[in-house]
Length: 294
Image 1 (tube, rainbow, N blue to C red):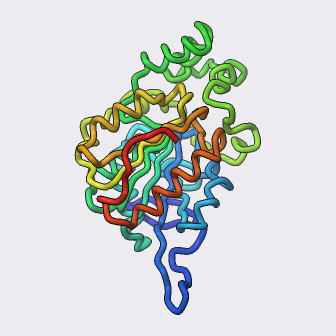
Image 2 (image 1 turned 135 degrees about the vertical axis):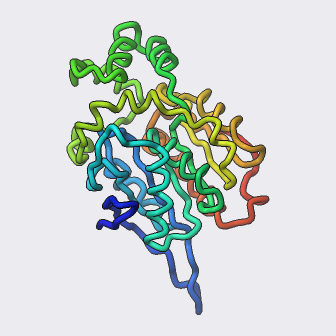
Image 3 (image 1 turned 90 degrees about the horizontal axis):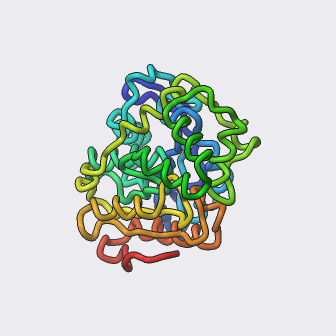
């Protein structure tokens, strides 16, 4: 399905009910909006079918960001986080979604952070999943050097510097370090890639720094990260929590998981996320029991 937002057609899909029977009455459930990674190389599809699990407690909306998947393509040179964050607000307004829980994974995280900081009071809660507020290529390269050696580190440096000569076989050496599970051929074949945006993806990633903007976020925020994630490690998640107002953010570290923790450690990931989403409609004072490891 498509809807026009800020002059661009955005594609979305809906899974589950927002209003369910509850004895003699009806009960409204949270709406979770999922924002995928990228840039250019992914769309909403890698969330499926896993995030169908949330339909037991919430309505789930899958969204393709502008320039991604089945949404309208725009000039990559003018793609920016602020515009993407504004798209999230406009998308919810057009659909009549109020007080959503918005989850951003990987590259989707700073998009959601921009949305939350630019539109305080709109979301009931945010989930910043396996993500970052500022992209530090030097740190990323050093982490992969530690895990995979000099050759892998150089491949990562070239790839995130938009070097078109990086082959699929070379990237596989780095990709395997993202966790026990990563999207494979089947998942990647479902993606409608935007090669023009992907070609400048490294430049776009290196321009991201919304760390100071995090202090404007005013809703409960779950900062969730896999313990073994090399691209968005625990230290980066902690940096985000520290940048937010006291009491706003909770750090959740998923043990023995990488960049896709819902696949690496489902028995630990889903209970933590489901509890947070369920609690999103409760008073803020009851939401957090304090930071911890899951």
